[in-house]
Figure 1 (cartoon, helix red, strand yellow):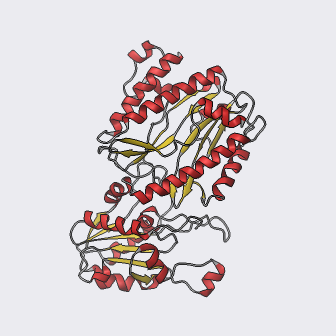
Figure 2 (figure 1 turned 180 degrees about the vertical axis):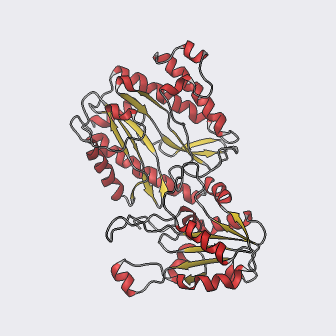
Figure 3 (figure 1 turned 180 degrees about the horizontal axis):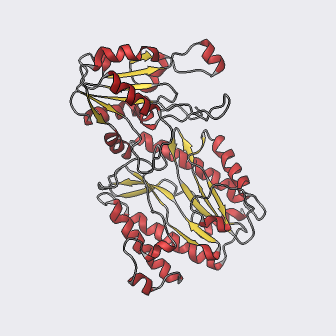
Amino acid sequence: MKYLPIDSNLFIKNRKKLAQNMAPKSLAIFNSNDIMPTNADGTMPFRQNNDIFYLSGVDQEESILVIFPDAPNPKFKEVLFLKETNEEIAIWEGEKLDKKRATESSGITSVFWLQDFEKTLKSFIYEAETICLNDNEHLRQGNEVETRDVRFRKWCKEQYPNHKYGRIAPIMHYLRSIKEPEEIALMQEACNITGKAVERVLKFIKPGVMEYEIEAELMHEFLRNRSRGFAYTPIIASGFNACVLHYIENNQECKAGDVILMDIGAEYGNYASDLTRSIPVSGKFTERQKEVYSAVLSVMKDASKLLKPGVLLADYHVKVGELMTIQLLKLGLITQEEVNNQNPDWPAYKKYFMHGTSHYIGLDVHDVGSWYKPIEAGMVFTIEPGIYIREENLGIRLENDYLITENGFVDLMAHIPLEIEEIEAAMQS
């Protein structure tokens, strides 16, 4: 890993919170992600399962974590299983965690090798009444491959058919949605690295530059600051490309007079950042571009005042839609008649602003958390309004990451140029 070591106290606290929320005599099992193949003997870069990382800090494949708060034997309350390392593995694959280092990084004292998993689990699993298995219960998930968790679920139910089975994801979603100070620090570092990359490309962008060259400049800055890279596939969209919401080809020339929409973010310590800026290729916005940019920025600033403890996300998005409606009326993009006759399920503003304004962010860029419970302090959200005018080849979106506090919010990206004057000045410096 490129990131600096994370204090094990974070993972100790996270496991304690999980134990406090588990039903009596229940046991939870978490698996690492697979290393996915490409072709021949190639593999994709490994990315750890967020739940096992959240609870242990273990960032390697073939790992299993068992949490059993009511285990009669104290050594089985928290058990970590790792792929056994040796000299040959170290030569071919690099150093893996040994038991001592695993305890130091996770705070877990009961560490076994993976080949001992079945017999060790059998020695205490019959003391549990419910086995809670993990799964990717996310609104946007669409698995087309059989994950390690899916395979394990089949195996476990075959081996222990008489146990009750439960879900651990609802508890994990709530716990992960409220960030500990150590997590905020990791997210702030991801945002700081993103800011450095934005400063770099603001000096680099000019007519004739290719979108992929901007992507390369961003990646350079990410890597040199201990980030693994982009937290998600980057969008570098110039001109009409900015009106394609999930444009990721990044292969076109940036032309004079156009605006580039950059939706990018560095990852640090497995935590994501998510930023969007809209940049004039020529270094100066036209009057029309300023007009639309100012409208989006106005919605962004007003939305930040609405996102606070006690608010339901569904209600928040309705209010943001009303803010956007006001701005689109001012721009002459929609009429009052269209607003008066709009379909409540697809309001008039959706013609130019089709997506949501905010989502949870954390270990996932679209992080887990409830959309039906009130917002709480400690949660982190994006705010990302946009206006996409296809007939004008103009798409403007702005996005920062916000920590919700009891008294308002902290903009984790407040240091990154956002105002029109700041953007233009940075491009001229």
